[in-house]
Image (tube, rainbow, N blue to C red):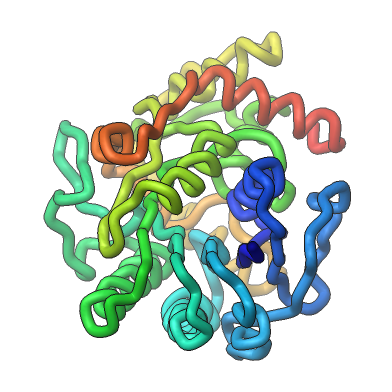
Length: 327
């Protein structure tokens, strides 16, 4: 029973691979040439080389697999050149899923994102909240929205046996890169966030998200979407929890977004010169104007999905970051 995991060197993909190995799956992990595989060095997995941007190695990666977990994505909130992101997230996703269908894969779990879902002002969104491409802020959200639409179209056209999961904001161990949210946790733990903007996120332990992937494989309905989320928290609450666990004072100053826009533009200009991502971008400020709160009720009902406290997720993340020298 070979199960392919794309993006296994990443944060969520690595957690999914671990859950699958623990459940007895023979895991084949796809990674780009040159990608570090250190985070899964202790796992008994078969490694294959594949690239969503060039589409090289995809047919070989899915050959002989019973299941496919397509977790890989280009997850950056700011990019100097968005074209590779669209090639990976949209074109690469379609190519991989077509290859999987051609190889006779029995079931596919596609990792989308809550970035593809609608927004409810002063409320909580779910899988059916109306959404349009025009409402997506930034290339990452637009690319994931377009990719999800391609996946749904493939299911309609070819009866592709794919279940879609939409993780919210995973936090926890293994965030090696780290993700944008992981970077916030690290910076807050080091006392580098003296102030905050008024926004909110749906926080979930990465291992709960990984378990939700396996439950989607077993119980999910093909062509359906399932939010794998947790607890809605303001950014101030998240920073306060980090501060409490690190014996620091939480930031007290709340900044308005408008004056930060020109600073973000300068940061982006410097990033283009240095090649390093900006500390924050204009797209991130626009995203912050809409708290991302979501309901996981559908997954809880249909997949028996459950999530634990955000305090546990933040605590586990801090322990992992400390053990690996980030703090």
